Length: 274
Length: 274
DNA sequence: ACATCTCGTTCACGTTTCGTGAACATTTAT
DNA sequence: ATAAATGTTCACGAAACGTGAACGAGATGT
Image 1 (tube, rainbow over the protein chains, first blue to last red):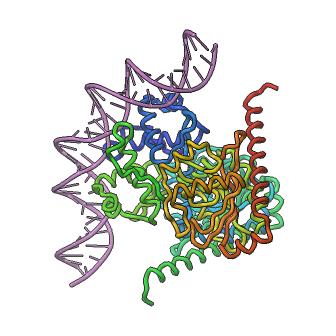
Image 2 (image 1 turned 180 degrees about the horizontal axis):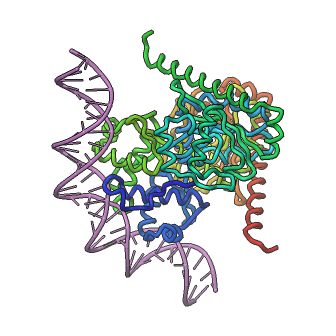
Image 3 (image 1 turned 90 degrees about the vertical axis):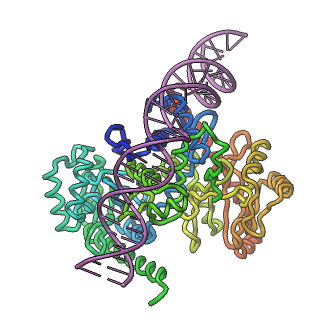
């Protein structure tokens, strides 16, 4: 989603390895299809058949691509890479329990979103009942401006970094409710900062409402956000009886404290004195 | 684990894009460390600082690498790639329920292993109780020769493909119990084929026992394997009271049928007639 | 506070090699 | 069986990758 597939070959001259870019353009293309042939890929990416074949063969040798009856697809090697990246994040190791509690007590899907580059990526999600499976969200990239969790993060980022993100990512319109005006967004972020709670009323997906709280570090800067989301109507009803903001707030502080604990533990074990 | 990090630059001449290989050598190196600097990486991979920097910068531009205070690490972009690859596999969409049932009825960790290239990769795992978290296994690469699920797959592969895998991967010794002799392995595979059940008594991890059944396609060729595993002693006790082979066998056929159903559904929807 | 050292970043150049196009081989469709 | 389409290989020219050294920023220690 709105990934910078580096289509402007002019601006980035000596600083980038073009061959690698081509390889990852192929990886990105494979990501969105089931199994694909050389010619098809070459046409789609406007590359020579020979070139595409060489790259696919390279990825195949490294076992990042599987070849089945002349067609190519990405291998499960990427599953290992993704799992490794996620498991290495200190915050990931402490959110499982809080997320499960949150999903349990609200009866809705609970997620943690992490800011990376200029967008947000779902780190984990716990679903209840008949919600779409968590796998469809984990690893998914969304604009920070079009989701409650993303706005919660933006509201608790240093102003210069927040502005940089808004500059680079813009405010893409995903539904009729998406905020696309920068001034409006800045006002909204101010409100969110005051409340420590962000709302999303169908800004990412039309029928989906979402409430979120930022997870901050010692400097009160966002490192992530927790959120619950569900069908618009059901969320509206529940919000009358349940105090989403306070539930999310306590989940967020719980996660924050666990992260802090983890970090002090790590420092203690890395530093054998004390 | 035993990935072919392409260390022999001689044998693969014009057929491979060397720049891409270098980039993925860097990715593979990043995978196993937390966050790393240019110099450190350059030394480890015996590359120039400039080279490493250019590659990291490339990966950064494409948002596959994150830069934090001069150190680099892999981004969650790989999480999305991995999730996408896995979700695209038809078998993945049908194993959740059977795996949960299996874990429930045996009280042990239940997994599905998929063969890729010459090794096996855990596609999914459901754990119960105090087992190590499933995330540590999902995406993990293991030798097919050193685990019950892997042997179950080997036993139900065409002889030529089985031999090719044994040729290429060898029989690496991981514990004192690992089978390292090819003849012994072939006999074992024969037994496994007869029983449709494979056993692993500490061949991958010393204190871990594992029982597995192959999941086959219409041709009776393995496309995966289901397994349960747990601490050696507990597994030994349980195996007296529980009939692991028959539980695994029915799980395997259940999965097999579900996969077949999925495929006929897909064909029906892709083919608008009838 | 200063000096020094380390590390990340940039740059120019020579040479590897990447990408192109066409030919060949192999598979699929007719 | 024939033909069309697709995967694979090859040779060559042009592009750019990797090397080494220089620069600059940041950390470290005195």
